[in-house]
Image 1 (cartoon, one colour):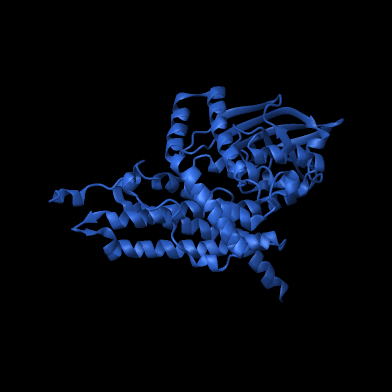
Image 2 (cartoon, one colour; image 1 turned 90 degrees about the vertical axis):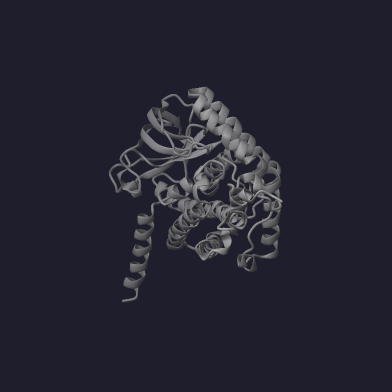
Length: 431
């Protein structure tokens, strides 16, 4: 007869025995085309077979590197991990959905990218954030606004995992209000000279190049005098002023404060039209938000799956905690929030892919997903109880990421402002 105390022991990650590739089912698949359903299964199988088994060890390795090393040595070791991850994805064809075959992609589009994003994020590798930053934030603008030479120079190596990129918008004095941007670029002969500072640049310390925004005409409103540039991180005058301490110690996130002092880049490093940077930025943000949302939903789905399985194995008061309404109702709310948020994201991705203006819809998506993901992860933490707060389970890591989502890529408040502004414009136009 087994020891009755076994019924009250803590459940650990080793007790989680759902078969690899399992995922909670969703009515969402009804909306997908056959090709999209096939892609989901391919991405899920790959992620669960190749990525998930190494994710926990990779998190421990990242934490170790961040504690043990500093400066150049730390950067090089973290870069090596990120690039190895990207190379693995590239070999499986998981990096090129947003990019045409001419530049090394597969040209499947924004929806396909979102579907892959969810599955990769659900696998939980710490370098997945760098993948999103490098291939979406730092590179989509080059695809849409770059010259042919810029596209051929930067896109293929990034899709192969040979080059990393980051987006540089935020400054010490500007965040949501880009109209106060202070970084300046002045044309001197055939070179642009850039001076200023950029802060909270995710992936900036690991990147080879920045997609950077600066004011090029100070005589007009900043939104009409802003331009975009491709800036090498190893260029003279580019200095990492500070490595910002991040709470996400187990994630391969490198967050830096960058100073640019007389950084002169060739004239051809201008990305898109002169003084057209604000449109470049707005266009980039719509795609960034929808892919960011789908990745966040992948992490939230993982929390739901972990919490649901745990609840069937954790025994209290001589019964699995899943049999208590206080737990099962939380699981129901988590599923409903996940399903609703995914459908909103899919709708907006379809709009962007079709070239339909979606600024309001992308803001709605970001707001709804941020709030729903926070609810899902918070409930998962509650279902797991004390062990969910430890590093034995991935929920504590995702919990911190989920809170960041309500700030990064546009805060909840800014999303509400954008939604209300567009709504009231529509009301006013009908009078």
